[in-house]
Image 1 (cartoon, one colour):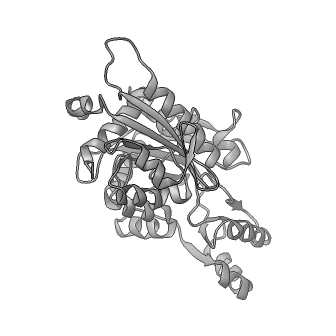
Image 2: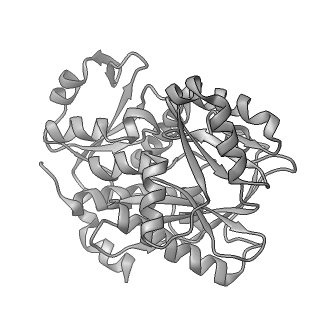
Length: 353
C-alpha cells in the first residue's frame, strides 16, 4: 500500500530542480561529501527512455569548511547562493552532523522560503541532542540505559566527583560520547574505570557536553523509517551490526572496506527482535516529529531483554557503506528509488515554495 500511494505523487518530482547540499563544517564533512556524490549520481542516472521520474535538473552545492557555498564551481555566500537558484528548487540535504543536521541549515532555508528534504528545524535540533532524545524515548516507554550528562565547565571544576558518579552507573563498562556528535567521532567504549578520564577528555575536546551511558552488552542494530510526521510510516528491515572482535561500531568499523559485518536481514536477531525494532523505530520517529526519513540505533541485549535505544539520526548516511541504502535494498528499493522517495516525501510535506 505504501509504494502504491507513493506512485501517486512521484510524478511531482518530474520537472523539478534539485540542489544536492553536501560538505559543511562538522567532523562528518568527508562522509557528507561521499553522500552528496552518491545522491548526485543517482538523481542524474537514467534507466532509459521509459524512466522519466527524475528531476529535470540536478545541481551540486558544497558548503565549504569556511562557510561559503560552492554552486557548481561558483563560490559565494549562502544567501547569494540560495538567491541564484530557482525559488521552487528542492534542497536535498546530504549533510551530516553540526549545523547541517541540527536545524541551522534547515532554519536558513525556511527563512529563505525554500523546500528541503528530511526533518524540520525542531525535530532536527531535538534529535541532535542525545540527552534530549533519550528523555523523549523514556517518556514514550522506550528503554534507555542509565546515563549522566557532563559539561566541560563541571568537568574542569570537579572531575573526581563526576568520575565517582560515572563509576556508580555501571559495573559492566561505559560508553562516553559527545552529546551532539555523530559517526562515533570522539566516542569511547570503556571497560576499566581508570580509562574514564581519558574518554571524557576526548569527548569534551570535541564538544562542550559529554554523555556517558552504562554499557549494554548485546547486538547493535539499526532500523530506518520512511514517512512524514502525521502520515503513514514504513519501517525498513533492521540491519544487524557485528564489529570485529574487540571493536565497537566506531569510525573505522563504519566506513572502511574492512569494517563491521552488517547483515540485512539480520542473521542473529530473531524475527520477534526485528519486529520489535521496527515498532520502536516508528514510535521514536513519530514522537520526535521527524519527516522524510530517519534511522534509529539500538542495542539488543544478550540477555534477551527489551532493546535499548541509543539515538536517532535525521540525516543518516547515503554512501556505499551506509546502512539506510542497505535496508532499502533489502526491501526492494534501489538507491535511485530511495532518493526519489526522499524527494517525494519532501514534496508531500509541502513548504514555502
